Length: 624
Image (cartoon, rainbow, N blue to C red):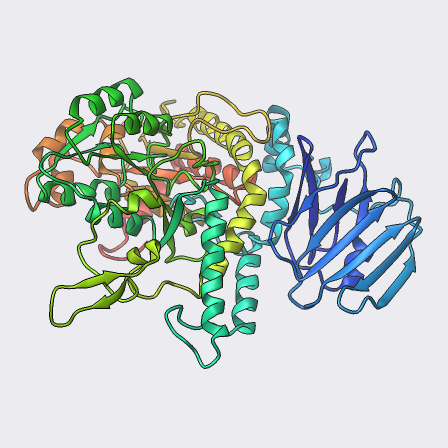
């Protein structure tokens, strides 16, 4: 069964996938009557009805319960303007709405529409535009759908784009920096704003004039912890520590891990600087640091990783940090290596900041000791909140180097005695947690849960089309390639919803001149800005991954204390870094098409030269 509301202010869709029915609400409805007036039941080809319809946004303000003959289905809707629960019953053509508080029937109307015949126009039609509206983009989209027909099964994200991310099209921005940070859904901000303006919250450590205020904050924090554990399918024995971001979560482990002279710290070269930074704590305590080398396209060879883990295993307190997905090379490392390291006696740490936004992570299947995430990378809002999802047994092994407000029960002053707070996670949350934003984390996870099943397939289609298209482009004058893709490409194309990709949705590349020389990334940035394209250039805080992609690993030996990036670039003889294009939650074919046209601009001798001349005339120090 599917329900559609064609009203632009209230778009509802229920999608059947493998017998499981998921409902997604993209916007708020105006009123109860308007909602019911617009809803139309549509049956699938076999006339089957689905029963379990779950809200994408969690606890609703309005609940509609539809009963059709003997097959019940529950439809949830969120409307911040109406603050009571209501039910509606459809039976034999009658619609009745009642208030659950008073059971008063306040609306009853005979519903006589012919469900199989009278449908309003749908908000999304996954077909090419009519011939009268054909242009290059439309023709390309039509050809794209013929090559990737499975893309149409992800149409609900196009609806999402038109509602929660309409501002991107309104301002004409092509956003392809989802690895830097996801765009925020407007509905998530509205729901959170409504909650804040209707609630009084207090410091979780306080007793307010009415304890309900601080208790509300505590309850919201507990709900967020539960939502995080549920989202990552964590078994019992895990808890959540709130941090500022994934970096803060990784630092928390690094500073408190009990490294000794008999310990070792193992990590991959293709890792974020926040993972590399833990080596400072290890080295200061005399532990050995060992790297797993990167392949030329990022990631590592599993057999090599296992050999290094075996060879360098020492007597006690060994830590292995795994990058789940590289933020520059697009490589996904096999999570099974964590189980192997654990079998050798290593404690295990997973940097999931780049992995979590578009991949399903199950801590029941991969019971890592600790995992770091940032929520703004997953669903855009709020920033400034991350988490360490961690086994309580692992926390008990950590040795915090200091204490702060909120982490202790009693402190002797003067004197050396402290007693830490009884709740284990509170011992690691310094000061006051960001309690005002935690309800948005709960809602954000519910929001992402509704769309995450569709993302791998959708991004697989877009990534395959984008890479094959730009690799075909050639310079007008020489016929030589315009770009060289350095990052790992997926080994297979996904075909159905629910499949998981073996890479991320990133392309790291360099642009080549007609003579085959690497063009300056600063020039590519200038061209991108001129075409309202948001991408990123540089080494992405991943020097090991960047060095592998650029083939300058041996040049790392030339670095010396105090060296700067400009010094390194002067020694190598060119700008360092890559151009990174990353797709995500709200990416569409139109975004990818604009990137392809952007690359085509570089391929055209005339347009490229004109842009180059303009770029060269920009005064030094002026922002582009």
